Length: 519
Image: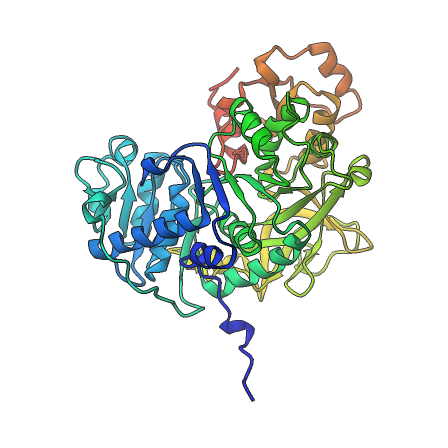
């Protein structure tokens, strides 16, 4: 009798994902919006097989350069799809990719490289001559995808034979990503194949109804969520449209040409793409499923996106979680439910994989409807924070992970999000709820963020589409029945400090207001 492997023996490995998909599904197309930096001659119309070949060829170059199993390899380069391919190539030879956002400032990137204990570094000229200038002493060797001075070009090892794939133990570190950094320097989150597998399986179940549909993705290539979604889509053989530039002027024609059935991006990008709902050629008309994660999405945006589809029953699935846990709760929206959607309702735990609870100040489960601290229990939790084990331990209560959010559960067990703990303002029940209300009442808003002012008063920072002046009379009417707030501060959307996944850094806005950076 053959013993069935335990769940602890299972693992999700990034190295072989494209080859397995190519062997299973053949030459399924993959379209890019810009050529790969590691091989621009390939153009933008590729396939599973082509990308599988690129991953294996890159793994041969890295092995020839001297990279070996379990060594850390930081990837910090200009944003492009080859971040994903380099990640898979590093993983294929058993090394540990450490993914650093292209948007990190030089000092922050240097701090994270220092925590990594002299890793290999894969980068490019733009980074080495800009934010990474002077970090050579923090890394073992620097490899470049181009002709960056002071780095070893990967091209030097072109043609090297790809070694056999290396499979790490399921509980060994296999991927390092970083937290959003909304409240300071990001933390380095250490993943292993087993915890990644425990995130992948429920997401595969959610992806079953849309198996094989063309998927258009604009997501951070340094976030673990991207790789789990990639694993789901490759498993089902979905054609891919991978987008690096979210500008609707370029995205619209691309979506019109490919008519995706699946679209996933960050919530703030979906707000930007609201204008695609009635764009020429109806680029969203064939969408069956939208995916939103990283942050709660505004109900106005959900309604517009679903209305843009001509499919009989389109839906949007919202995943609530964080880098440290993966998704811990989910919520579905249809056209019918979106009409009465509560943007603060983030759903229920994932049966068999996650549990969610709300606790009072003494750590006891809170009564239904009573606000408290949100905690999650999941088999997908990271192993640790690299270089910050004590900080990791402080967020644990036994097996329960403190999410850093305030919320409450309904009598039926549905989780409702109120605010991040650090963003709470006594005069406002929920900043996020007020923001949803304003976004629904003022269609011209691109974003609104409520942050505490110098005296902890609520200060709304607003961004208007096309940078038009905010109409003070419309604002007055829209806020008449809301908690008292300071006069709105109008900023350009590009001025908002953001993370790689377009999360607004509220603490940073508060600091900027305090320093008088904006008036």
